[in-house]
Length: 355
Image (cartoon, rainbow, N blue to C red; front, side, top):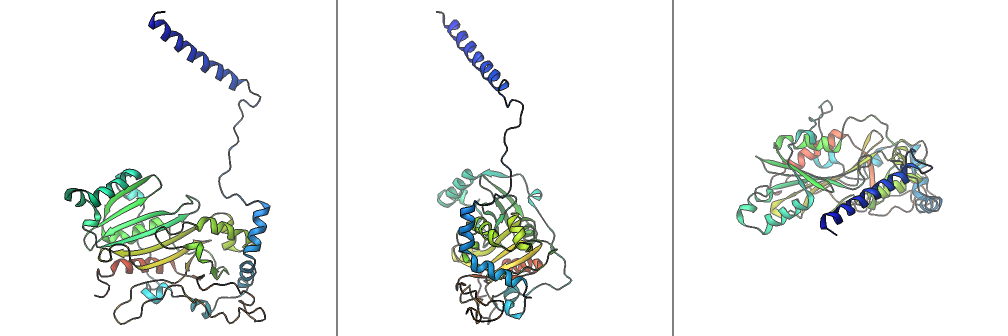
């Protein structure tokens, strides 16, 4: 058989297979119907998991219901070191800083694996390659991790390398990294755009404490946040603004941390955790910051509360809630402008915190 004839037979066989498959699809009983589309959004856990979660968080759920009916007072404020304790705060009438988003950045986008390989080259490669790395000129770095539940559920990162004259912003996703030069004066504006912090429109809810694992810090903050908040939503009181928002999967969990080249980029000199939900902004756990000369450093989350009401026979909003651990995180409302103010103060720290 000539070679061209064999090729022709093969092509005809392939065409016949395509036609046969098309005829099969068109003659199915469900032809023309839309395939089942898995609904987007939050799926409630099954009955067995719901029961396990209700047992696991029963004490927190009971306390949350009591706290809803108990106005917050000075004792709530005393449970943690707030951003105002460390950084002060803006004047009451001061406006929000301008908002900058990814649309204001250039189009320099690298595939994530390529970006990581460049980082390796910058570390181990020749001097010319190393000079292109922000590590060659930056003296400080701000990391903003975010879990935006409606947009994505895995922590994502905005990283800003900067010194007094120059700044480079990186927007990290699972597959790519967008990189662009910005002005140092624009850093807080990009933080505002990335975190979506804005004026408060909700009402303060009753939740006072969260387990530490809900908002972990470290090398990859917030790695368990989405799952843990979804678990807590099962036991949150019905009608609670915060609880209803958790059940709807409408929240932003944020961490802010600043490090410096002089400490090898590994030592964090300031950090903050924030939960933005139901139109309110809450500080979660202590604010950590480098103090000015002569002031004591703000403590981390340890021995966070004097729970005189932890005994089941005690009275008050904390009565019977005896499962709070020393590492659990206090939850206190905070002005979002104060959060952005704190970020501005973080990046204004001198390169040597002792200066």
